[in-house]
Image (tube, rainbow over all chains, first blue to last red; front, side, top):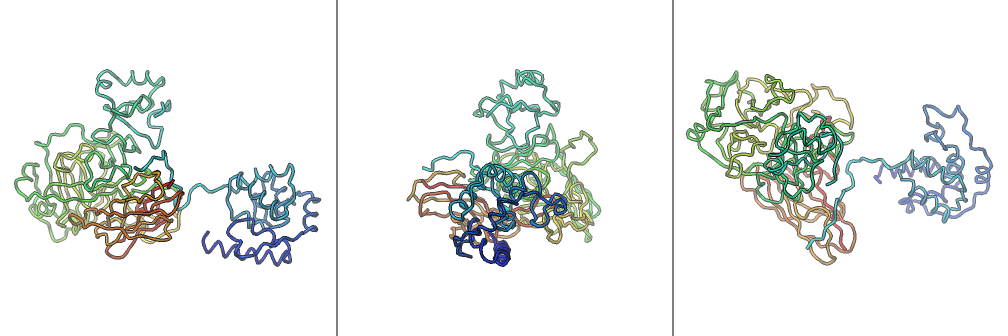
Length: 158
Length: 424
């Protein structure tokens, strides 16, 4: 992660702290590795926010979507985005998702980590929907400035 | 290799391999199609001395004409093939391991005893024609080891991707070339004061089959043409130049894009302006005069001709993918080159560029020849490593660790070469 990303992340975290009055951000920012040294994650319960998330419908206001993007969050408003809005953005910024790229398996691991350490609730049947949405729309970008080395066949150096 | 049922020429990156002689003698295009179980699309373009990769059972006895069997063929019409790094380990590149970059169809029949080279152009004092024998008798015959590298070597790494042959690292080599100095021949014909550039014309023919269409005609400024190492060559490594590399006569300009080193050389024009042959203009062998952001549209008038190639290096030993026992030191070695310049320092890293270890670096055999380097690495623990190599030229400029400035045609990628090693 370069310093620019760190700055953005730091900015996002500051914003989040302010917004959630320090409750939720501290719990969840650690979910995306490499930021633990910026903030010490603290376990605190946030019943109000979570209850709201669980009880709200998650339906999108049509006016909030332009060109397929959910304007308030900046996320792709397709498929099961409503479930993501309801379950993920209830606690942390969409920026934490947008700046990351993972395959479905890694997104699921991240959910598991949040459940184990950050008090994320059991997502039930919504878990598969969230993982599928993230794995599709926030998948790793295949090309960068250098690609991973591909070894056709490992051999022993004598 | 698995059997392929797709049409010939459909695979972007495949090995194209010639047949056993016995196979060729018995086979026709139609019978090959029958064996494949499908029509050979574009079969009429298929080179006569090769067999479709789909018919391949074993690679053991098959060769690209005059080339090592493990060259990676990027294109079969025209033939373009590159050399995997571990096959470039020789200090002097053997003829069968030098890459092939053809723009057209090589001349089918070549008779060196009747081959003629003409000098003409606005800035020649006297138009002259020489046979190869006359070149040998009239001028001093010299040999130099000269590095030639395709301007698009490394193109495959650019993002957004650039169109063209997706060379990885293997469009480079440094054989020994024998011939006469271009300057001696230019001076014999006479160079007018207004001379700016030389442009070459070769005997290769256009893919379209149009006999009047020039395939490629590039060149260099007079200053480069007059250097001691700029050659009109007829030998590579003391033998005839391989057919695909320009037999019987070619230009060799070490350190510049290999497209300046015209093959199957028939004519040299001394020009009173920058040469304007095919692939001199537009975006061909040019990069933006000022760096642009990736994916930019760049107008032709803002593109500048590539001259000297940038500093670069290869790890030629070991081959990538090596498993090494913990505690065993690993000797790594390779080559480094720097266009018109000399390589001053060489470094290797085993920790993704966080720390660098200085390698020993040999002196070059002559100007514009690549240099050999060597280092011994001691890996601290088990795990996956990448060995990276970084050369620094005599002006203090080093190879970048990421892909350098994006350009529309994907030239001049001199990012550090990397190989994978697992310590077990």
